[in-house]
Image (cartoon, rainbow over all chains, first blue to last red; front, side, top):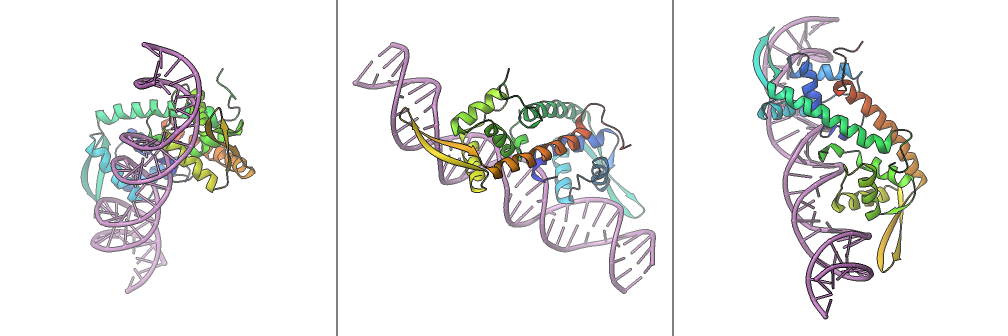
Length: 112
Length: 112
DNA sequence: CTTCATACGTAGCTACGCTACTTGTCGAAC
DNA sequence: GTTCGACAAGTAGCGTAGCTACGTATGAAG
């Protein structure tokens, strides 16, 4: 998948992944890769800053822990994050419909 | 619609609009607005540079004309542009499926 | 003891859409 | 007869945000 297409949708993806339970950064990368069958293989330079953004915005909260000698920062959805995710879902629906009107097969030549 | 969501999909939209016939810049803006029911109201600072990009890439060709005293630059899809549009459509399909797996209602908790 | 997977992180780059602006014609309103 | 809004083109500079390319450190495997 072309990289830049993700622009503006990454936050939604992160919130969606965390919806199913708290995860640490590295695990989030793996979850994205797994659930997308490898289409989404995002570098740390993308997701770590994104998680910080979401935390600054209050949509996730993080807690440090140590698992077998390795430091982990585990992120969890906040209530605000759950609300934000709902909004992102609505936004995605609209975006999908709008762009689909031009790119989906059988796009109407003119609006009826 | 939030603005930045469009990132990376604008070229596809422009090609799709021109697929149905040559149009000049201003008319393209109006076509986008019309076919999206007003969701896409893009400023000239967005579409004029984008059209230049597409022309540099060889996906569209432009010709000047004067209609009732007003200069028009009319853009037309090239063969390369038609091929590019097909590719963009495929890319859109994949993007839609991938992101949809996370954001569409009933997203699977895990890949089956 | 070296290499790979795990795990965190940042600095700087780049792409690209947006804001705000300029230039100019035409028709309608006043 | 001038002013204002739709039509039509364009650019300079900005901001956002994902990516590249690093750096650090532990544990397991060979």
